[in-house]
Image (cartoon, rainbow, N blue to C red; front, side):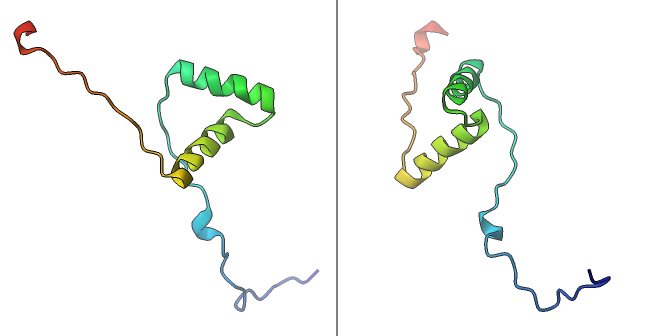
Length: 76
């Protein structure tokens, strides 16, 4: 093995922009339990399953559907 290597001619990692970004989110227990159970069935970690599901939402351009409840002003 050489004692020194010259990396001046090396190329940049082409996958650098595709690396994952660590984030912290809070999930309800039933969500974690669902994906944990699915992880046991599939042999894929629950974190990876959540990532795969979210990536599928991005690929399919799915948007969440919300139904906001209006408070009746007379009940204040």
